[in-house]
Length: 393
Image (cartoon, rainbow, N blue to C red; front, side, top):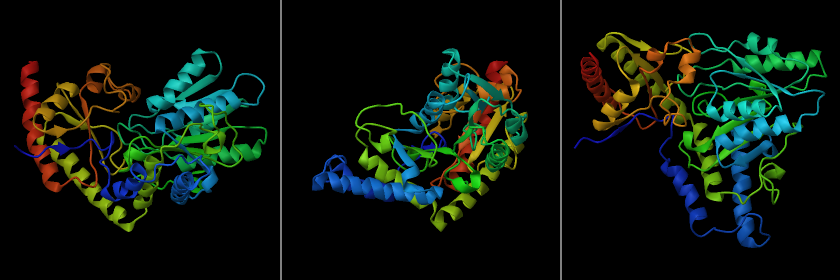
């Protein structure tokens, strides 16, 4: 039996052996509660603070601006609900986001809107998934408290002009000191490939996820710029500087710090170049071998590992299952939304028709992807697409 091929790195990444090695002491002998004052607890506390410093170096921030959460979803909810519920303005707080954000951004905004607690503006993208910085800045109002735009789209890989958006918001706030807008970016998919220096991005809040960067599941981070005030979601013992109560997942936090530290290793830059080359080979191979196939998103300003393809006359979910039977794992979009039977709202927001949106699969590569795996995928893909098209006739 042929070895299975994993091409869904945007959903989750394998745990790096170096990360696991660093976590092991905190899964076994160093079990103390980091809030305890005795030596067992203080060893755990020291490990968390060392990891906080590693994340801060990755972000070019202060350690105290790093707050650990259980996931990126929690971090996004903390950013959005925390700002909205802390808003010190006259009238109803206003939040700006885009139509192609992750569910963990859109869901809390929509819920707050339905509860009548906020008003929201949803910025459209162009057909390649780009949100224009000027459209975001023009939407700012006196009561705007938060702008949340994803750094890189989790489905189609399009990279947004986050630094430009952040600069535009900063300049407008300098001209209008009464403007209280805070800028948040979900950098979950971007972290492995793009510069997450919060100073360059002009970000006030930034979300990261451990298991997207070869770290463990169960850890996320919200960068909170010093001076930004927000309400906590989880009340209790006041851990994580009062922003996130609950005993910390020490092993996962240690793993996240090590995983982000590894991204800064020069080897990662070299690996990303190889991933981009494999991505380009895959795109060229699929489009040349399969008639009526299309690439979604930007040809140039996309994540190094992202390939999003559409095949006329084919259901993406059928193709996913057919590939899985051949031992190849891909997805039809964000893992968080894949269980739904509805066409991707991100693809519909790009202006695609229902049948076009339903014909897509997402292939995402990683540092363990081999050239022969990409070639096997291409050899398997073409006949499966042809077979599914014949069945649909």
